[in-house]
Image (cartoon, rainbow, N blue to C red; front, side, top):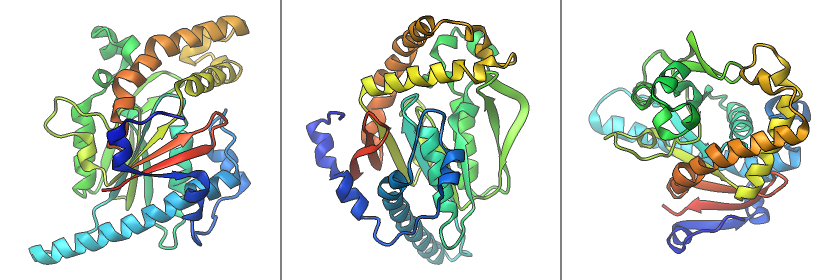
Length: 311
């Protein structure tokens, strides 16, 4: 279980798993086991029980938040004497490498898209806003990929501003984990979603820019876990990918496919302790207290504790 500072504990209401699950009320389960098999990542065996007890209360909370935001927007439009609009509701998902952000975001997107009013829900990851490898190499940042300075923050802010401003079409670059780089000339086009989920390591990061990515978020979730657990998940994932995706000759990490298990563990541990752990400690974890909701995971990836911001 992660430790919380006194002032952070005062900022949040805390729930154990049972208390949180009870807040589901009558929110229906709209996912099947087959859906989960498609949505979850290679080393995350999310169960339907986990969806019911961890995700459905959040889905209900977000449904209430989105309805309230729409009402507030209508009130503001009436005050300004302009036609009623519906700005997209933006949800940020933050947390460490290997903590389970991708699976979490995909499941959440599917649940929201199956609300009774069937909102249009899009999912964007901040990987697409990384500088291309050529730029990172030129700046000596290849071993800092995922750190705040490795992102094109101006482009990220412009993207979020255009989405929130209701632009008809907004394009985001596409990142390939196979190529370990931005794909030249390829984009994901977002067309006025009702809800946008924005997932990434440092989405809650503050910085030198006068406008922050978090200025555009309506709600934010931080996925938390003990450092030792995240490291174990990172090593497990690396070993699984070594036996699968890394076998593809086009994969950036193909060169590591023939490492022995002990060699692979040593390599992955060095990556974790030399890159991902410092990024977590220096940049990612300090943003936790800015999140609307903190979900703490147990060693088996299941939800343990929930902290909901009071204001």
